[in-house]
Image (cartoon, rainbow, N blue to C red; front, top):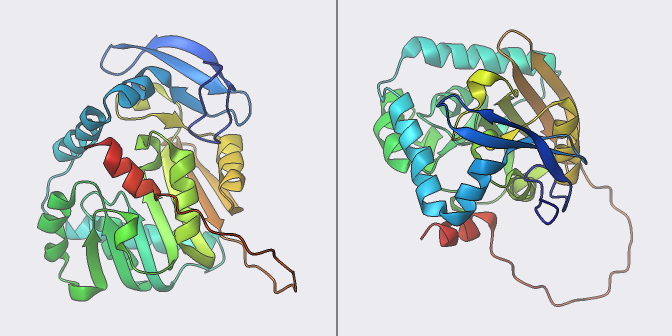
Length: 273
């Protein structure tokens, strides 16, 4: 484990065995903890993803297909609007602007609800077929758009939401850096994940964040914490962070030739083909 990187903070050689246990399906898994950020990871399933990322991707799609009904519920849409409104109240009414991305959108409820706060909302998911069935049912026209990756969204955005998605990403650290790059200065990254509890130890969950892990992750990808909220009843963690605004300083920078690096999404697609 000493040469493995932590999927939360990117540190090398800091993951150590935490326990061997059974997951919800009764399968034996190795659970590790990072000594740098204290994130807990399902090492067994992470290693499976590295061996066969195509199969791992299909696992995520299949889990979504089995979870979603594909028929829009107006009450659920209203509840999503209410949740955003309440969160906005908690963080001082800083939610709102021109464009937002719901990354890992599922059926698109959060993206649709966000149209009440942003001019344009993008619902992004690896399961685009599901979104193409559900998004038209919201009746929001061009305000609600569908895409398969963050690269498909033009320019920079005011906010990126990830609701119960980050735990499904094998390398959350790399995705976090991609999110930071996509945000405008002052833009928000808002995400919610399940805590490390027995019902949430399933084959499609790779990383479990806690308060410290969330803060280290946020700082390591170049963002600042606005607030961290703990849902004690459901055992969920909600994090609101933002991209720092730079101040204008006269600095002499030596010209260098930029080295083009494939985006997270291009590397993700390459590994799954």
